[in-house]
Image (tube, rainbow, N blue to C red; front, side, top):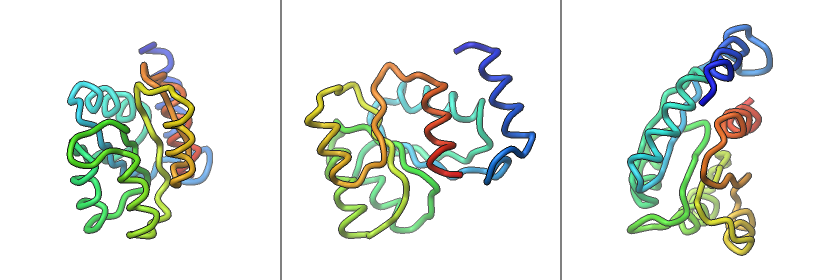
Length: 143
């Protein structure tokens, strides 16, 4: 990731521009890939004041959401035990949580994107992850 990009976004957050700027965002990341979770964490922590919780699958994410409050969920689609689409459906229907949801996945198929959005996800980002897009999307959905 471009170091100038990191400096720019860190500076914007500390200047207090926009609602919620400077406030620590509580982010839940659900992805079975440790590498992807680390990449998401590193990108977000460099650019945003945030507290990140990582889980490996949808079932674990659902359990966390029942006992802890988050500002946003970033989830993969293909995960063991419970996939991201099932997770989104249960969050919206069973828990009735208004939490913003970003789907981040290698799947670029319109059917998966449309299903996720129809279930209640706010947006969809494909891998490889564009750090600028990720940070701007998180900011846009949490401010």
